[in-house]
Length: 429
Image 1 (tube, rainbow, N blue to C red):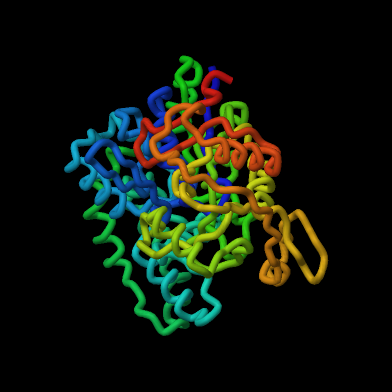
Image 2 (tube, rainbow, N blue to C red):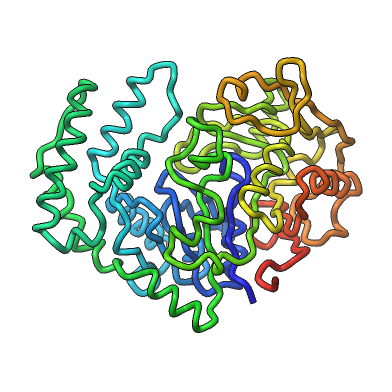
């Protein structure tokens, strides 16, 4: 039996939530290991729609959910999300949800700094969600973060806030934004601490006990490899590492616990916010993909930019992320297209290349090189077996496998959790 780690292989929004929810039926524990509440997963279960940002998707399956130390947590957002899903009938309490006591916290001053800096960038905006994720990660590596465990120690909290306010108030004043007093932050945390502290625990220790007991662990990534702070389209990236290797450091387990790495990819490509997107479509085909795929950000509500499947990006993400198999989602969105295309490379300054450059200037000059394939008129919506798929759809999938050099091991054909075709069970590897 193996643990499984799920990561995105594009720019996020690949449908990880549904896949994690589906896999959670085979797991005992589901762990979030990086990111913050700028990530969003939408799960459709019967007539219920769950929108999750911080909570691990496994909670919908009644599994133990874990927020690891690699996540940055806005305690107010966390409690709000707990209240919302509890009203929908989910059981979320300190027994079903474990939060690492050493997670860094996102405070109102992080949100203010994030938004003030983004406004100051003018037309060079990164496209941040303005939720304080980046500034919170900055404070973590600068060793001035307030962590969840600090809420139980007033003296520690007091001197740490002095350092934190010195840094952020200086920035905010320089950007012409309102500053904060220590009492404002203390009052904010005092209101939240009694509700959030009961969830705090030594996650690494509990996960080690679970591993020794042979329990299956599912690690749930947020965002995607092309948004990784090292390997993505920098600076238009998130503020954390999103590759599978971080599942270990972000939850306090050894690297051998990561297990089978399942990369999630849409059957086409989308992106929210700013940054390069070589295969983006600006015509009616791009609009049709967005409409049929209901492409709006779960967290931001912003419309997603849409384009054809980019095999160069997914191949790179698969190699960097250590992907063992691909879960291909939203195949049904391509139903009815007379022709489908795959980006197999780029033209850069008159030359054909088949890798993605690191330079932002070079990325901006990339022109996609497409390979065309026949589409299919039959529906793939709701298909639950390989035999239900049109021949042209199977050829499309096989061509993707060749180009990305990774097998498609799981296929999603609708938002419903059971409309899934499994070719290889990652938990059995």
